[in-house]
Image 1 (cartoon, rainbow, N blue to C red):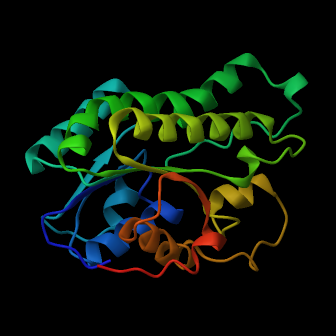
Image 2: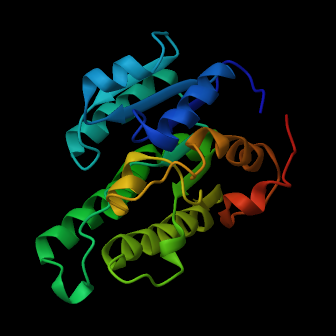
Image 3: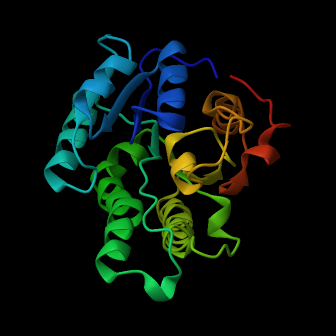
Length: 232
């Protein structure tokens, strides 16, 4: 995915996991990247110090923080890629036992924040004929006990992203990266050895191939993208 130096991406949750791996890869390929995380020190420590990198600390649910992201995009004057990666796992409880406050918190992070941030950035995406991506999960289409809160938010995110794409004539993808060796995955399986799970870096080439190719908007699993090898 070799592109011109002036292309711009926004990736939420860029200090760890898939967000960090994707941001790093795009920076290496000449993109300008705007990314955020709650931990400012970690965010600055993990990404290169470069004029092409804008790091913003804050909670993606906070509207003032979203305004700061939009202001960073405005300085670039374009947006070619928006990736909703920041996620909250939430309580691993049967739905009958989930407190409303915790359910609402997950929806605010995983669904409402992507909507309001996209609304702020949509004019730039449309003008640049950009691409909208929501990082999904197999839990969005499967039914795992105690995963209901997270699953409901991801299923809704899939529909949100794909509907936004349809309504606005832009490419939109819901991408299930599969199990990865990340802190969130470990939190979902406390005490379990997850060292056999692939690193997030192994998923990035499949995601970049999707973004570089001509695949129609839709929901994809990373394993389905292994054969997508188009590059620009």
